[in-house]
Image 1 (cartoon, helix red, strand yellow):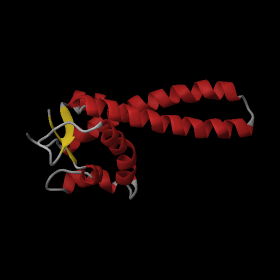
Image 2 (spheres, one colour):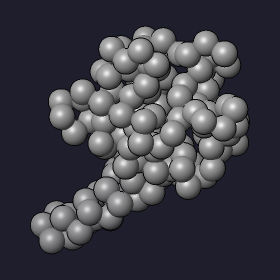
Image 3 (cartoon, helix red, strand yellow):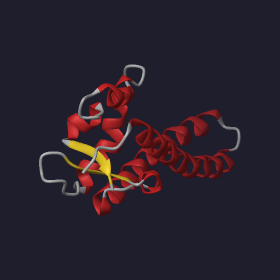
Image 4 (cartoon, helix red, strand yellow):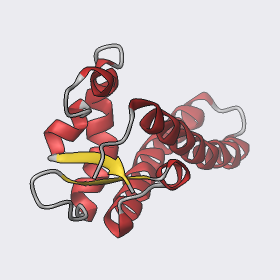
Length: 139
């Protein structure tokens, strides 16, 4: 199969970020209404929202990528993530969740260079692809 283009991956990532952000935003509004104006409670709820958003991101990518290799954004751009050295098989829930959380953070660490790497790399792989033995291909 052909590897996914940088632009397809970027569009898919953007759609997924919007989907996850909407869920986190709704959660923040609900918890903010509960918190009122108490500074300590607001700080505590902000930490809870962050942890819940991280868990949602892990579950979002873990479930969707382990199911058929496609997140919502990837379905839109007709690409999918698969194991690189295992004949294109689907990735496990744990590998998918870690790739979509820890892996994305690593790729974003140095001014997003890990994401941009896909535009420069011969194999069109990001840093999180290299770490988690994956690649993204046309579906």
